[in-house]
Amino acid sequence: MRLEDLKVNSVVLGILPNSIVTVTKNEILTNLNRPDAFILAIVSVVSGVAETPAYLRQPFTQEPEFGIASVSFKLAELLEKAAAQQAKIQNG
Image 1: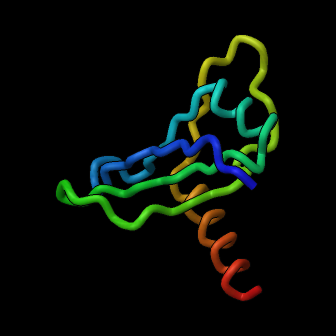
Image 2: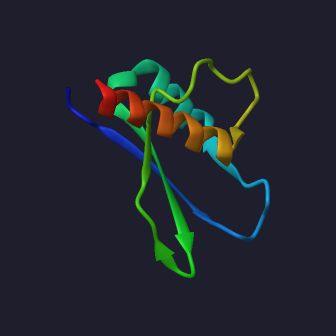
């Protein structure tokens, strides 16, 4: 596998209680068309310092409808999916 696209979103924690991550339609389409070559990396920033990234493979399951330019996702749900993937990898 050759990684070609790494989408990095940084989130400043503590500003919004229900933080969201916005991903463009083109980024979602890239993931759907080349799922093995795309990883969503979410980096939390606390007091100006980046924490360890959470990596999420194949985070998207469907193409946005016509006319949609970007889609917002709940940060907590993306982080839960990333943690579940990581646990699965560690537990084999």
